[in-house]
Length: 530
View 1 (spheres, rainbow, N blue to C red):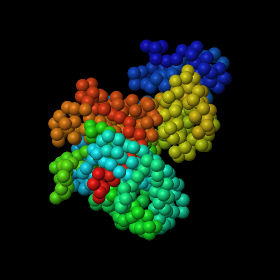
View 2: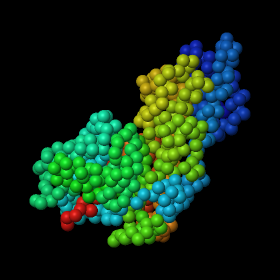
View 3: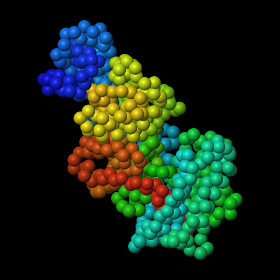
View 4: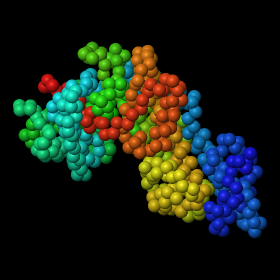
């Protein structure tokens, strides 16, 4: 049985012939009895490869036992424990999905009762395809802001033309006054509007209307107003907290004499749903999986107890779950807990810290640091760069996982170029296994979260979700560029729903949908008739 699970001595010899490798290999033989005491079915393939028994020459045996026995004896449990702690079997996924649905209900009942904020978007009317005219979108969510214009032609022509531009925000404005920041943004909008021409046409006498995507914590009070709770993402602008951000922007445009107004304030996830819904009436959920993560969905107004005396012509609205704050029953490792404790928001955003692109690479790095320190994974002199927080990004672990070469050359190159460590093929296999463990957990938990949302919707309206085609619109670089993660997500949805029901749930990529979505919501909430 053991011979079927481990590399042969010939395989190892062709991979590395250095004396140091032979010494390590001798130690593998020494640990043979230890390996046999472990459950081989629970031992990760990379560990089994790393702990291969063989027939080293006797002159190395004593030296090997003395030099590296203790390191290798403590190496295997690190990966075994990691995979055990991060495991997502079907019962764990089912618990997460059920807990997500329960937390959604609690958040819809009373503010503050759940990890999920369940924020009302005040989006009652979704795009239908009948929208016509010229509309703008502004996306402010980081060190750049993006402006976009779209000419809509109704059912026949749909999107006639689009143009966009991106403007970097000077760092001094990120720490300046509210007036200075919004004046700068209004100036960028004005310059962009001045270039309007060609296929873009604004009817005489109309004011340009904007869909404003504002990706900071805000308490929305209507479709075109929202109070800033606090700045995040490195911004520390004075004089804005507690104010309506739409008024701040509208006033700045008035100071410049710019004939534009905000007609819709939207979250980026809400914009993604609206943009996807424009093309497909079956879109009911939108999820962003990028640096951060969030999800929103179409909810019945009569299923929102905390929404008192709020009338809706359509009888539905979009709810922004802010699901990054979910934490019920998540499988966490010692490395997750360490990272959380060291973060700027300990105890918060636990779901986001296990599934989003901001954190996956950092979790992997922390595992590798321990392996390097305890078991000399990269030899006796691991680079100090490996100890730099967030130096290993999720794009790096995605690239390493996609390496299918025999000796994992791409893995070796990334380890050397990014964190400054040399690695043999067996160390690279361990690294690949760690990347896979963290990505698999993240993708499967994200899939369980999606099923939790669908489960809640199905319970309120039997057959409306599972009984017909239902589309989940996905956006974000993590989902787009990490194929292993994407597959694990889909696998989890299929496992939870079963092969028959899962056929009705379509997960579609909606690239950059939030920008056009914001412009479309400006159109649906326009003060002018289409």
